[in-house]
Amino acid sequence: MEKRVLIIRLGAIGDVVETTGLVRALKKQNYNIDYLTGKAPSTLLNDIKDIDNVYLFESKKYFDIYKLGKKLSKNKYDLIIMNGYSTLAEMKAIRYLRKHNMKYVMYINGGIIKPN
Image 1 (cartoon, rainbow, N blue to C red):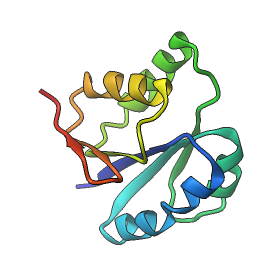
Image 2: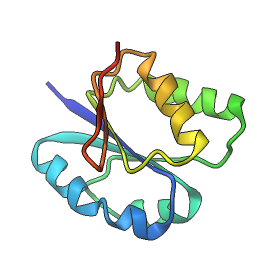
Image 3: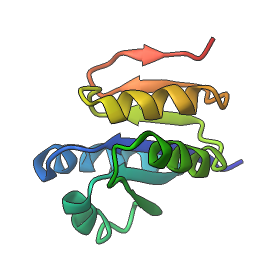
Image 4: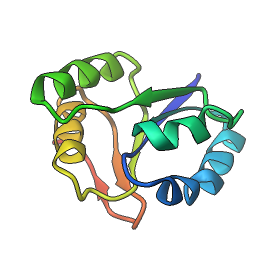
């Protein structure tokens, strides 16, 4: 059975680079890895072979977040990993994804959210 993970990091390129070790470790565990990030980091991530799909987050408008969340929820992730939760957009995305019965949401700093 294929395992799927979504990594969300909307911040700077350096923050995204910090997750590349995590990407390699997840790939060794046979995860299909999707990454949601901003425009600048996406150029770097498109060249990493262990990442299966890179989704671009460009707008903080609620409707755009809703559409992106709906698209991502079709992937039925087993795990969602957030590298921080500092922006309103990240919190809205997580709230939406949790409504779609994701098993876990984990923050890089070790916190875990289990959907109710």
